[in-house]
Length: 115
Image 1 (tube, rainbow, N blue to C red):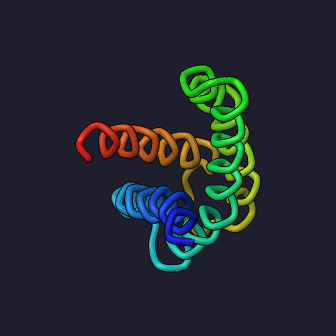
Image 2: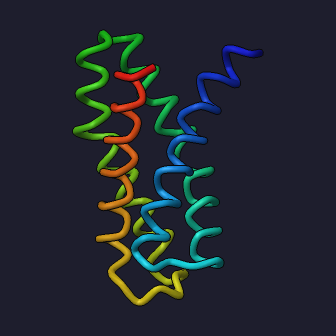
């Protein structure tokens, strides 16, 4: 059970942390920050599951590459669609999704290198 919590909990917490900081710095506030958390609770576990399955079945490096090239763009599109008509923030929901996901990916890679 601890392994499962670590496998899904760590990436989710890190994603929420990095994206909340980025979203706040971009001008999102309370309601939109909550939406960001909820969107990540929906998309992050699916992404982690797909990534694990890819790495298990086709190898770590290829699975990681396909995660970044295929699964992450699908997450960006999904999050954009979830943000599209729900944000109070007046910026572009697609740009928001792209920027926050790039920030989250970079933060995750940095954490993997450091820890």
